Length: 483
Ligand SMILES: [Zn+2]
Image (tube, rainbow, N blue to C red; front, side, top):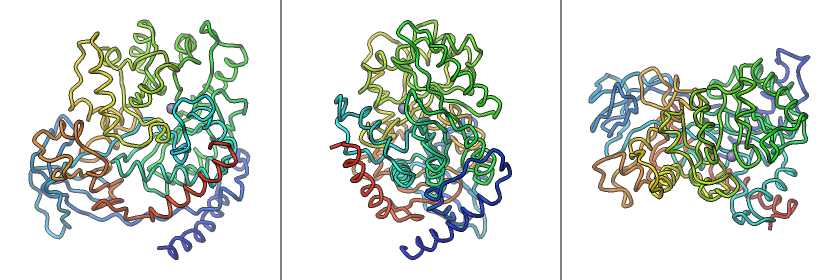
């Protein structure tokens, strides 16, 4: 495995040179540093054709429903058919009996670059908590650290059945940092939207729009599992107004994002109260905007957001822990009553201690059930929808993932039903929400490639991923004063 990885790395160096040499828009190019070229794009394994046989199939497609015993046919990375029984000669059978067969989870916002800070954060401590530690560590992270952190976080995601992630990167300090992040997304074989940000929120660093264009034109067309967005990070004043310089910067960002036809994402919180009015006045509210953390909205703002079809990312576990920095409880019930488009998210696996999407479903359920002031229903089935197809709709990716619909890409997970902590399963939606753990995720398939099976990763050396992340974390603790 090691020799193979060294070989890959050498061929990668060559491949990066080839990519740089073939760039189509030299006038727009910012130079990509040697550090960013330290890794080659890893070749993904070939896809084969197979039938997942005899699982409890939850398609999350209302036209197809569920099959208590069903088959899923996968070919060329796509779902070909789903039925109670599919008999095709010469197609490999993968035994899915005693498992729930379902779409992979779609995580609508996670800061993958923070993954390796897990273990170095002390809650909301003013010096060593998530926000101050993240700021100090981010300032000294190299592209190599970013690569190690993203890869480490993605491996955790896959363990938990997350096959698509919106990687919200607010630590792009150079083109090399962006390249390293994108490369980790590609190397681990996941589906992702990479949202290009800058360092910090708010940031004194100008956005490198030339490099955003480089990524859009050069990298992404060759990487069909990846899509691109941008982060906008304005702040408002206490009265909800915006300083002229901040509005200028936001206007510039919006002009670039709209000209490039890229979706844009914004954290909502105490520093952005009033932003919804500002964005409404400039006609920037639409389905390309993903607003993270539905906490502290006024009734009028909720109406505006829902009517504008703005997408909402809920990070249930984090929102419970950091409710004071974001003005109160998660307004799931209010937004659900307005039929807003919402999905779930991890936010930072370092801050929530894990990338566990079963916990995210449970956290939203518990937060919702703890409220006595709403009659809005939240069922286990609805939670699984929010974690899969609604997440895909929230990221505008429902044409390719989020349900087991023929024609979509094959992003599928198998969850064992006979493990100690989940058996016996009678209603799979109930069991997924109330009982399931990442250790029950037996098989993870992304784009038709089996990345994990029998609880083991098949396409990368997880020991190396953990060692590399730990080495970076040890250095960051020293250099950023995290300990
Ligand atoms: Zn966040």
